[in-house]
Every structure is written in C-alpha cells, then in structure tokens.
Length: 82
Ligand SMILES: [Zn+2]
Image 1 (tube, rainbow, N blue to C red):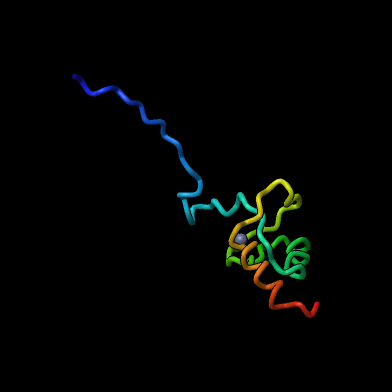
Image 2: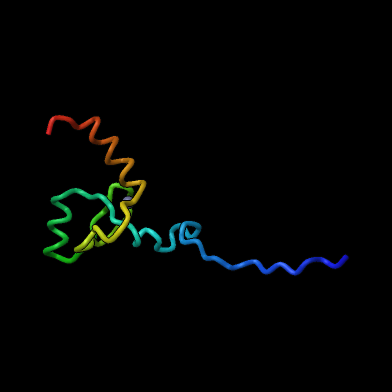
C-alpha cells in the first residue's frame, strides 16, 4: 500500500515569529504621559511589556498585548492609591 499523499498546508503563525515584529499587531499599554508625549513628538514609547512602540491612533483595531494586559492587571492591584 503506497503512502497516502498528504499535503501539509503551510501556515505562517505570527505567534511563532517572536521578536519579528508581531508585537506591532497589538495595542500595548504604556504610561499615559508617555503616550501623550509620543503623540506630540512622534517618538516611540516603551510599553509595559518592554516593547518600544509607537502608539496607534486607533488602538481599538488591535488586540491588547497579552503581556501588557497581564502587567497592567497586576499593577492595578498594587497601585490602588489612584
Ligand atoms: Zn505589550
């Protein structure tokens, strides 16, 4: 019996391309003051996850970076003093 011919679809999973710019597909959390500064200067900010990134004008179009979200949630618990 011959081997069945199986075609394996080649799927480039963006998640496997770590450090290859996949973070640009996310909306990251950063300090508000940094984001405001970036809006003026056009310079990138350092997000909570460490990603240097230029805040998007419409972050709603992007998924929130899971790493940023996690750090943000943790910060909320420890920084409750407003
Ligand atoms: Zn992030």
